[in-house]
Length: 195
Image (cartoon, rainbow, N blue to C red; front, side, top):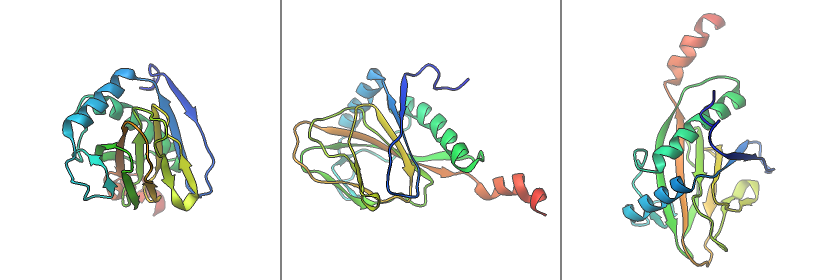
């Protein structure tokens, strides 16, 4: 039984001019969204716009905070399924970091990637009319934000958020998964099979 059996989700696909796969799930959890927004507001800006994110940004490790903890239950399950589907292997992954952001009008994120992580994700607990989406410049795509959208992508894919005027606040959660003890796993699962 999957951990997602009791969670209302809608799975969508979209086309990108890219060799890399992307995965989108839409979640419908009002309480989790409210908790995430409250925690991001409570934290404020911990990085003074000195990262690629030129908006308010929380600490790097929000995994134990209300709302974030619930989201991780979902992302942990999904990323394992993606990894298994993508590689046909059950390579162990772990969450390296998870943080929240709060954009106001004309805030931006400079184009960057999350290498050496394996998989990255973004989650949008709210939807604001006129707010910019997530741009994948190399693929020539800007993903429009939808409330509850959880988007996974390869960590080496460059992405950004462009400046744009809008009213209200655009909230986002982002995180990275990395392979765990990959060489030990390869040795354990393949050493005797290769020799």
